[in-house]
Image (cartoon, rainbow, N blue to C red; front, top):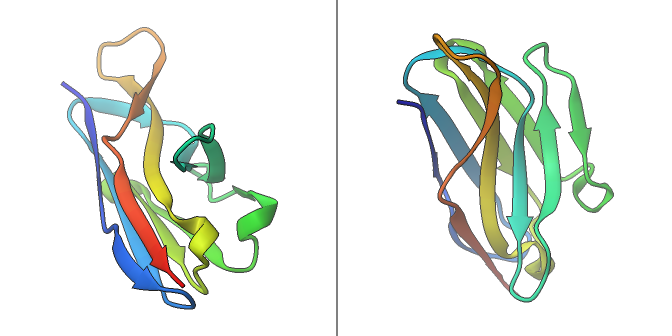
Length: 121
C-alpha cells in the first residue's frame, strides 16, 4: 500500500523560514513530478512548485526567489524550503505524488493529509 505523508508545518513570523517534507512509502516502482500545493481558507487549491525526477522545477510566480523545491529520489522524498515568508503564504500545504505502484498499470495521484503553515505579521 502506498502512502504520502507531509511534515514540517507550523507558526512562523513574517520574514522567517520553514522547511516542509513529504515522503512516499510502500510498493513504489516509479514517481513522476512531485509537487506542493496550498489552499487558504475560502480559496482554491493552487500549485506552489513541482519537481521532476530529473530535477526540473516549476514555481508559482508568487513564490519565485523565496521558495525552493528539492527531491531525494533514493528516499522518495520531496522538500519545500520556504524563506522570507509572508502572511499571504499562510495555508494548508499539500504534497502530491503521481506514483506507479509495483504491479500497477498506471500512475495514480496520491495526496498527503496536509500541513498547516501560519505566518504572523
